[in-house]
Figure 1 (cartoon, rainbow over the protein chains, first blue to last red):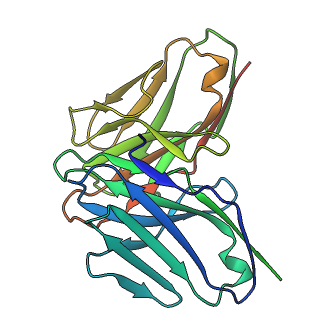
Figure 2: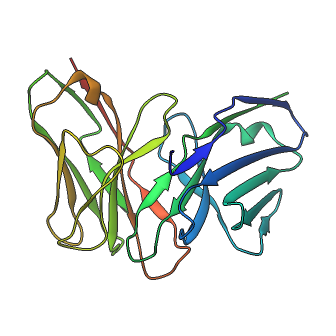
Length: 111
Length: 114
């Protein structure tokens, strides 16, 4: 089983739609969780960290469910500029510093 | 603001050749990482280093070696390149001080093995 798994998509949605991605992780001791965004094979960049209580940043909402070992990302009122690949990232036990990526979910927003 | 710098940006190798990919960061990161990215595969961890002088294997270490020369530099070596190692390689650094600190990436090295 992969350490971090995502639905690879692709997701094609119209502008203004709401879209949600899920990601599961296998190591119950994982400490930190993130969503990264990657454009056109450029380097990944942090979209947002995921906190235990859930967190929101504008149109983006991230949730963590430790019991079921999954994290989610919700994008509301999607924009053309949201078209990208979204990568789920999990940091293992803090001392070990192992940072593992999911395979990414490709999102295309259509006008 | 250099951040994380990878060299070279592009490289073509013949099968069997060796080369070293260089990565340097000026962000005082403790942890550094090497990933490879193939189409549809996301980023796969090759090796990582939690601190100067330590290295650990990731998901796909075969065919690679690494060296954490000092806090700033983390190099990736291909001793005998194979076509299966054609990929985009990313180096990243992260400060382990806080739980939710982000990782910063270099711009990538696009390697083709023919």
